[in-house]
Length: 162
Image (tube, rainbow, N blue to C red; front, top):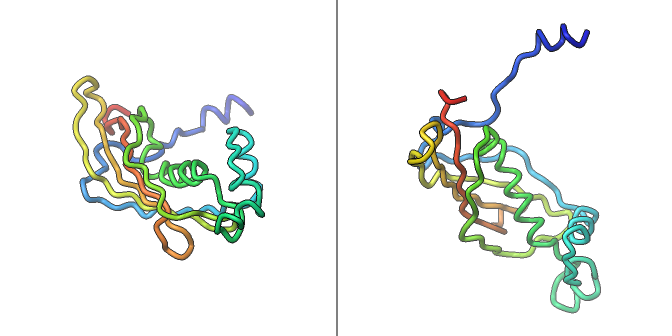
């Protein structure tokens, strides 16, 4: 069965290619992600983020929060991850993040959503089979409050190169 299965299998392209993006285009990323205390505790421990705001409820309350605060880097990586399917899943090099802003704290049981806008696209001078796309990504909580935003860029393959 293994060889028959491999013979019949079809590779499906994932994500968008450089040619698919247009400046001003907006992507409402369709998945949301609810952050729970376990996510926050595991992430904070694994990344050795020992700020007591992330794991000590009494400390967080003493500093004006209703409960522990979700580690901001977990917020960033979650919102970034929500955007991958639409923006960079086709592959290509990640070129970096700039203008990362945290606007308000996120708490366990908050659900994060993301939206991205194409800011710029240009051909790559060194890799003619790819182009560089820059997006502005915004992350919102379940109350539609902006919690984070940033710019990121990727080298994205052209459709004909794939």
